[in-house]
Length: 329
Image: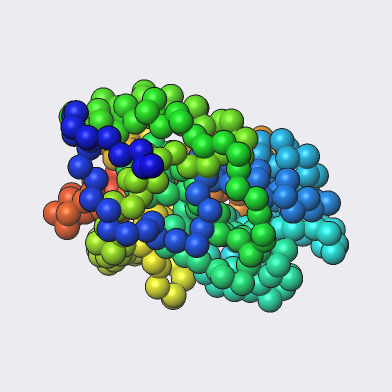
């Protein structure tokens, strides 16, 4: 006997295009939940973490009981280990702003691939199949309330529980549709705070269904178009060293301006750019690669919300802000 019901009210119209982008991946409540489950299953003796990492990852590792060994990044964002990498160790590497394809390839020839976890939270459309695991945080690319994906070679049990909290995390998404981004910002922060629990938990049915309704190809192409427009017009005033390799469905356009912090000036003009991982400044040297990333890296949006005309407007704002900062200097 099935559980089909008949009649009543209609659900949200969420057309299903098929599976989500990584059909072989395991779906979790969040990326940190996925990492926690991976670590308690794998049980490495140590996990090497970059000092340039968000607190939620650190919290997940600590809750798993795995010891942390820290590493710094060189000028090319490649790990510099302070000790010998042991046979029972694993290493987590972040694909920073989706621009670290060469570093990941080098990493997998420097260390055993089956010991490498790649954090693709800022690189949804990137995948390294030979690594032990690939982690994804799709809410950083799409309008979903929560959710994380884990693609791994490891045979893992399915979590016993499924997330049922998505209904309380969608308010910011609805407010953004009805009004604008500003109207939903407080609700967005509350939704983010609600994901602090790192227990192993399956993705909610709502988030799973939304992910199946996403037009991934259109979004990828739009992001790449907008990214290239920004590169054409802003590269000459950008200190970031871009890779020659193509960037798949980029997370953002990284704008590096080490002479002055631009975040607040842009926010005052309606360009809501994030400052990632301020807490990193408490554990790194003031002039380090990590500190410069936190202080001066501006992730300019290039995502599917914006038309070519929108990107042209963004370019004018950025150029104006940079000019003002140079005059002040």
